[in-house]
Image 1: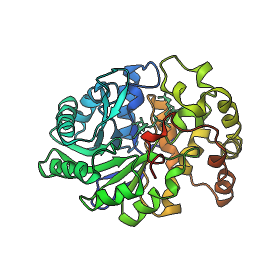
Image 2: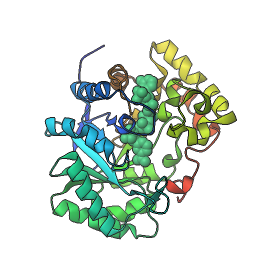
Image 3: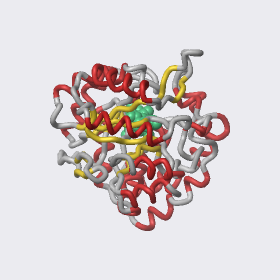
Length: 338
Ligand SMILES: NC(=O)c1ccc[n+]([C@@H]2O[C@H](COP(=O)([O-])OP(=O)(O)OC[C@H]3O[C@@H](n4cnc5c(N)ncnc54)[C@H](OP(=O)(O)O)[C@@H]3O)[C@@H](O)[C@H]2O)c1
């Protein structure tokens, strides 16, 4: 395994410079079953050695638990890393097992204080709106986010799962460094409108779930049968029931390329999404999530893999054939509103 550090790239105009691949920290505390916390801590450190500098969390990941978990690492490496967190997914007071979306000003002000406190920092490097509350004008939401920048609580702004129109309206209020949305071999809806708008506006793309929540690595086929009761992937239509088998068969061209290159399936999936940067001409910083050192090494190595035109062509039809949506309720996504 080569020890050289991964390349760097600048997020949108005026945004921070980061390693060309980030680390998704969500699974360390939330959504994907039990975690070996010592190994997860070692994974954060290993990622940094490899040149991964963008660390992604959210206040919603385990109701603040994920921010608290990464806080000692963040503080120990304050000047070497870029910490990104998010607001916007609140606990539903009527049913505490459910989430509601909130983008109103008092809520955002309350959230930023909570994240600063849990992370133990004076300033959040990149602050995202996690989900869009359509009852609040985007200008109002980004307006208060801009105030947080002026007050020194936040350095850069990001938006997750926004439409192209919402991105344009937001950018008119304050520069947006990055849009974070799902983008992978299985999830390409943002290519129709959001990506062209980001290119036009000079905004970077931070693809989340670039490994299709692990499905694209071949690590599991059927969430119902293979994953724990509380694993979030059991709620996602494309990983369950008959869809799972249909979708597993779609990985054949990925497997063929992986075998020919002595790489893993996950590395081919990551190389594909990384290469969108060249295809569209914008900064792309995928944030694969892992809790294991060996996997962060494997994932970082994929930044050096460049797929040929023939290989890209053979992967092209996959997304159009995926059975089942990426969420049970797509109104939470930009595709549901675009
Ligand atoms: N903005 C949003 O709405 C949103 C939504 C979802 C996620 N996110 C962010 O995006 C990050 C990444 O997305 P994600 O975690 O959902 O999905 P992902 O990165 O596509 O996949 C993560 C899954 O893949 C496994 N994995 C990682 N590397 C692997 C490898 N080399 N070989 C085999 N399996 C591997 C992980 O397991 P192990 O941990 O056991 O390695 C985990 O189960 C999250 O951590 C979170 O920060 C944002």
